[in-house]
Length: 436
Image 1: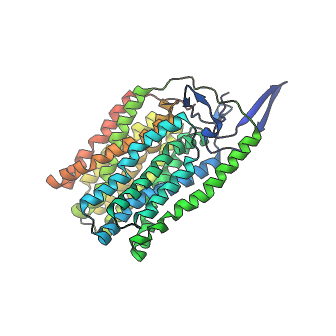
Image 2: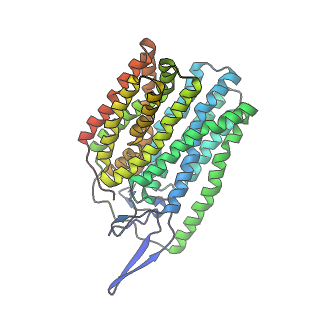
Image 3: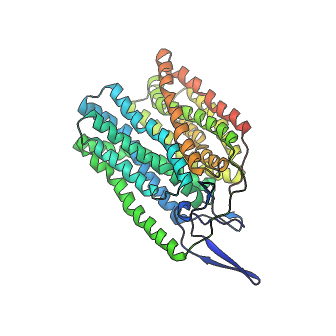
């Protein structure tokens, strides 16, 4: 039987007589605490018991909560931009620079943190990441100089980047390697991003951009919970005494399959950012919706996407990861076409809801499959699938804006139909891997 002595303090087994004596200790948040290194790269094995995934709910709940906090600060950046433009008369080029500081820089750095955490345990990043992200957002409106604001936003992005690889690894272990557990982690990030405008708008609208320190409150709350929890779990582990490292994973990193998966993630992220940019605008300009209705449609897309991510996790555990990816990619293409052909606003709303379900169905599954392809570099896999690949897809969004300017939104959306089909084609080169 494989045992993980990483996220959990685990079960120490002593064979004796006719049975086994199992002594249980308290679960830990991260496999990093237990070590388990091989050839300089730490293993990120999922916790199992009697051959079945072993879920540590308290650890998973802490990680999920921290993900809401850190991604709240990621979502706060676009919500802050209109207030910065009004208060400081920023040009569109300046606004783009801030967006790049928050997203592109963060996504490029994420694989670096992933590689570092593959080599050396860094569970403290789960608490430090949200704290740094919140500090950056809190400082963003304090200084008048553009360079100061840019640096503060970049600092926040680095906090986000530092958090995700280690947190994704820990979520994998706490969830026993199940796609459903990772779907909870993924949806927490969506909730954090979606909730940011709900706090940013009233705070900055009431007190002005110099009130950005108030936006650091979620990070402070997360750190107030996570730091004592991490210290307490570490003390419990030390009192439990030394433990054997987890057994080595008996398969190699499959970089070829990971490359195909990364390409599929990039194609899917192009679809995602395109829809994020055009769904509300299409309903407003092509179907006569008001601005408020367009915003509701976008919120519907994100909300149904959260449900889709949860459904995708459950389907992957039941029917396999690759099959679930194919279902999501295959369903998304006709949904995009359905939006283009929608005859009225009511039909378009239904299509948007189904499109959110379909396009988010592969979201968490992509991350877990990447981790299975690189079992010796789980941090790197998480950094690429959650950060770099998504960012590359986002860079294509301006190209579709240019296409919409040259022709119209209908043409831009029609071209987007091709990208889930590209992802679907790439899945023919993928194979399912059983969670370790």
